[in-house]
Amino acid sequence: MLGIISLGGICIDTLRLRKIIPESYFAVAADSGMAHFRMLGIQPDILAGDFDSIEPQLLEECIKENIKIIKVDKRKNFTDSELAVDTAVASGCDSLLFLGAFGNRLDHMLSNQMMAASLASKGINVILTDGKSFFFTVTSQNSPLCYPLSGLVSEEDIFSIIPISGEFVKVTIEGLDYPLEKEIIMFGSTRAVSNTVPKKAAKIESEKYNNASSTTNINTNFNLNTATTNSIGAITTTINTNSNEVITTTINTKGNNNDDFAKITVETGVVFFIHTKSDEFLK
Image (cartoon, rainbow, N blue to C red):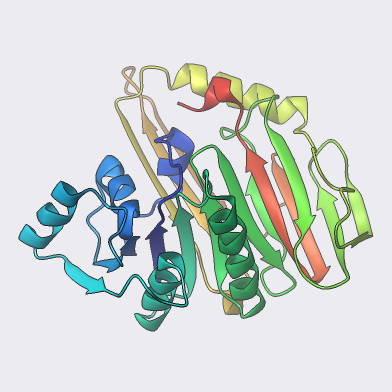
């Protein structure tokens, strides 16, 4: 089961973000992260935290709506983020999506990233996002990650791979402008930072955005599977335009020889595969 954890960092409402939120999930808001759920129309199963940052009126609304609340003392030896994650995992979640994972509190941002790395090493897939940048944990357990490019990227988008465990990682990159084959990347290296998408895939994206400019309905399901299924997930997209044309795309991200995929294979260690959207295509 996918758990959506809404944290107190920055989160903007973008089409790309909405495309990775499935119809079924278990949602936990961490304190002021409840505001992001309100923005996205997500009703949480649990609101957890010490409530030192949530707006009082929003907290009152949650109480009136009978949302389950877990309140802890402000003097504690863990963050509200960790509390929310532990709550989701204890409720049966085996993959997690962190909303509002980045922001002005750099200590929280780094600790969230390290928590994601730890979870990934235990077989729990994690995505961290602020609506513009998307961090995917990739390990040997859930490799390869076959990331769809068609319809999701522009030429200005940036892709990076950053090692987040051990002394080194061994990575293969296919489908991006700068491929690697079983490359050993040392911890702390910038060897795989700032990759770009082939123009062919970017052109397809631009055309699809133009075709969908009069979109009346977009229904997308992103399903994160557990590492034991050796897959990071699947995406199904249906677009209805005013011309009554229906475009349906089903993508199994476990493997495809289609040129419109970036394929990331990790043999050792844990990495972040990072997709940063261009401002031009955020909405």
